[in-house]
Length: 554
Ligand code: ME8
Image (tube, rainbow, N blue to C red; front, side, top):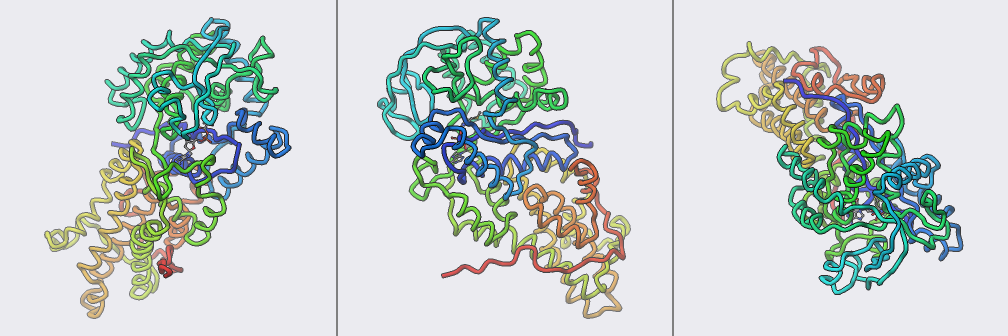
């Protein structure tokens, strides 16, 4: 059965520009990048969006501290984010800036529409405000944490404001029904599923939320019809997922159901307020598309855990304990971009446990998973093909017609490899990828490489080659099979280590990189994982090691 293909929309949070980017931001964007690359590899028409969130009070405060206008400060830091993402070869299709005219105009339209239906109304609000997070904390939560910020521990401030509200309470039942329907379909809206109960309980008690503030000094989007009020930064920010795809060319991405990657800190906004806003907007004239069935069925929020420092604290800008762009740059210079991408995607806090970033673990994973596995196996096989077959792909034969001794239990590794030509492997990989289990997807691809190594160790082509006249065919079958299996592994590994895979493809005469360029960046996962595409006689280049082994310094 061929894997279903279609359209994909992948997003990251838009990051505050009060300061420079750090590992946390790079992480979420990297994960979203790997997933976007997977979608493109399997021919999905993909849109990957990241960007920055500018209209926060902490941005204008920080700008004032530095004697700059909020816009100048935002411009500088937006540039820093854009540069880091470019340097890390993120494949985002656009970059959100909430100070862009496009975004501001659309948000104004959405809020005006919500005012018209009465889901946004004027009122007064008093509550506990977390200035660092720019959000109100409900009374019961505030009490639990002794009226301190659950994120940075600073005291919460009692604040009273006249402002506009969103009727979240009205959407409680619709939200709960939506959650239940998704659970029933076996496709939880909030993932990992372990995070869901807390949200559902909180929805049951949800009250209307303020969506505007006064005294922003003009930094923000004015509430339509009331220039004294500015749209609260969180509402402004959530709408980015719509504003950048709200046109005839891009709307189908939204309609396919977005995959929103975030960390657990901002889950409430994405898990409750965001779908409720969509439900409300979907009822406004001309906006039925924002909450159509395909969105309700497929949109999801994946909330990962935190990178923490060695002492277990969350890495954050305000705490000043983050791995900054310079440190990230050093890591890339030392190990290569593929290594960083691979490490973040496979050893990061994707599930429900926090991860500590350690240089030691990084080097260990690099050597074990990349240098000693894929890198070494590619060198080993191409070196032997160079030595025994003058650098030409040997004839690996048709596995159906090979001597039966190849099927004995002793040769189980060979059978493993042969199975790689079936659709099973590719299907398994796709299922895992679509479950966003990146470590298992990478492990599955690596298991093919491990089978190659085990097969070589078992059959010992280097020993067989000593009696060349007798064993030439067998050595050819072994090495040809290995080269073919490595080709398939490289296709599956491409979202994680694209640079190395593209180099390898060039060396084995596969024009996949060119094919992707010619096809709007889309690959052909199904076709490329079919067994038997390396033809006998194709030149196989040796080249330098793809991942030179890292020697630990004392
Ligand atoms: O919250 N570990 O922006 P933000 C893992 N503008 N991920 C981390 C992290 C860490 N230690 N620190 C940050 C905002 N992140 C809002 C979002 S979206 C409509 C508006 C990542 O700059 C993670 O993705 O505080 C987290 O959710 C995000 O950065 C918060 O970035």
